[in-house]
Length: 266
Image (cartoon, rainbow, N blue to C red; front, top):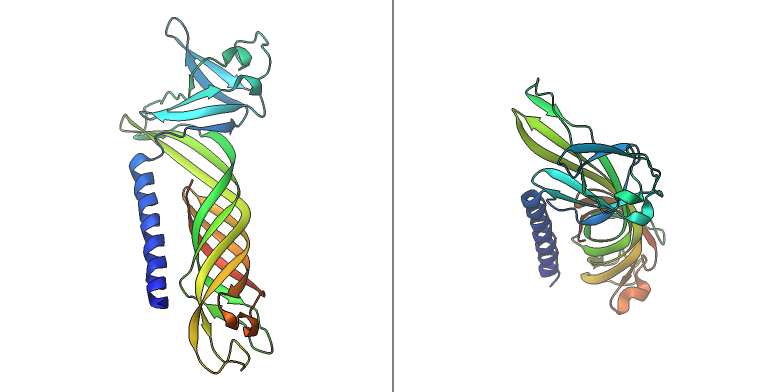
């Protein structure tokens, strides 16, 4: 039964990781489709009524915009309420530009084989849901027994607040253009998980003579860092058994530390 549980956990986590990887590789974030806070003092471009390109600088510190990418070009539509009132300055963005579609533009010199544009930077604070596993979990010593390191298969769900910093760049190689998107995030929240637990004389301080694997359920707090859809974290958890031997198990409701590896679901 426990072997099937282990195989199921590994298969589910592996399948989700592979599918997320395929999605990200295939789309390469073709559409960001979210509202982001844009870093100030960056330049954006727009077409005027005559079709000429004009440049404006963003000065507002908390300006927000919907970002999306089409054919290796990043577009931005700003929220009017996050821009300053009209100031009659044609060189800066204000509320009069809220109906304008801006784009990130770079004119390469084309004097080198490869040229890169400056980074366009943005950030996002959001609610985060992850599926994770803890490949290493350390239980502190209890009842005169030494600490225990476990590597059993397990599966958990994390929910919390995540702060992401992203940046976008155009790369010109032999006169062909492509885009590069990088993102890095960190967050903090809570989790629940399940795993198989060895119940024997060691883990019960001699109060149970047999040996078997029980179902354990965990809860606790988790801090993580993430790159694109993959996350790595440090968990502080508490565990109980799902059967009657929970009362004699020496690790019942005792803290443990674990390293987690996960994938972002949203």
